[in-house]
Length: 462
Ligand code: SF4
Image (cartoon, rainbow, N blue to C red):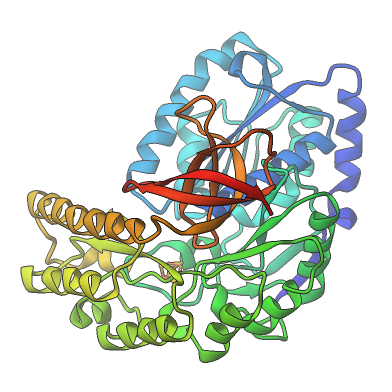
């Protein structure tokens, strides 16, 4: 059973106490985030908690009195990276008695990991898992008042905590988690073990958060969850999209990630019929081989996946499509891999996130004994990229000569004087515009297409 916890009732008194301690000094904090959008969203809450406690965001470790690492455990390399960063903290901590070091996130929920950090990094003051984030004020209170290390890692997760303060990284785009955890147990994935089973937020809490965002100027929201289309907060995900689509002030609604086995007609109709829902669907394929999909425990076949996307394309012509792909899953043969390439040719995704299979301890795939040799994994990965990049470029070229509505996100990070934004189908567009702020909408005539972005000429404001 999902238990709803109110942050105010549980942790606010500790936050108040620390805010009083910090009221004159305003110590600095840094949040270092690894991993997915869910972790980025969690980090916005950590920043919200810290600012409630009187900390201020700073841009260097030397100015910080609180440094927190929000970890991810989806890829094996993440552990080595974290330990490297933690090792560097020793010197910093020795030079600053007031510095508090914390480590949190889903890696800390992994078996033995919190104990390892506790033993090997005695200067890590606080360790907590993704299910204990709301306890940060209490844990920090323990460090500051009792001078004792604080460890809080729950083995299971059944709670949803509402009311945690949030500091958003963008004023026009916002993540809104609608559910936590996952029930799918794909054989390569650690998420259900570290984030627990699916728990859905109540629709009223979600809508309230979105209305608050709209009133503070947010234009685009991303509904987040490991498996959003199995949302079950008393209404279906399609119904939730309908209510979300009625929030005045929100212009664009995106969502991530959907599971192919849960793609019902009602959701496709919702994308087609609700004007504020973007015509873009990210639907992870992972492999084009039904044999491998069964080994991955994905619960759909290649043909079912293709049929679903053919229905999507027929019902919503011009929809943007993207996917996730894994190469080198245990037992993948050349024939399996060619089937993946074949699906890419059939569907013609606008974009694909491609990954080389990485073993995660504790998952069924980690003990499969038919590992694909590294050189074959890399060779297939390069071939996959070559095929998909060609398709991406060809798909982008179809936009040339069209007028696209683009929401401005800011100045290009690589080219001064160039404004960058996104189309409804989630393609990046670079253009020159006099004026225009993030969150403004412009009509852009697409003049050229590259693999990673489109180029265009400003026509008018929308
Ligand atoms: S759907 Fe599969 S890959 Fe996605 S989080 Fe759940 S178990 Fe992991």
